[in-house]
Image (cartoon, rainbow, N blue to C red):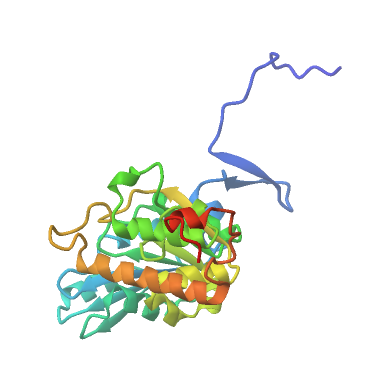
Length: 292
């Protein structure tokens, strides 16, 4: 046995770089280890388009832009409205940024549609521009799309917030997912940002469908697209977000109505039980013993 001259069991120190083989001239190549941005995104990786919503002329969505650069997107589409020009000039200073400026607000849902129409990437990432973008938080969504997922959502549901603290919106979202045979999604929904779509999903759903997130969410599942909940977040403004009078803010009320409509539409296609097996039960007991 040939001796190497190294003590048995001695290991070389770990390095951030791994050899990627030798080139034509016999020079070892190097690449970053799996998990760094360069192996998943960048020039040779996934082409990313980012749609940034929620900006106006006075308070531009600048909080999200610095963090997005770490994802190496192909393009950043910023939705902006209002008369202020300061925010517009600052946004244009960021590379690969396209600004859609409208005099009147389109709303978050309208902004998603407008941004999706201009997106050119293999993956379209939708983020809230009023919240600082955390690359570590967003990478799991993009990695999922790269692996073949069509709709990557942030997980919300059991294990993050006690069920007793869920508001009506979260419960209805979980009920919709369960009714569509996807209880693993918990209360995750396209109503929340961030989420990521594949190019295939955008073609299947259409950009206009993003104006009604709950229906688009249900359609993605019923049409056989690959939907996955990634990461875990308790979400913002979803727990106990109601006024003393109504129990639900107006945006929450609208979200509830949209999810009810999405459930109704899914039932019209898949039947009242959405294809679920009707287990045996004593309905006469539920009716007080009266047999109809």
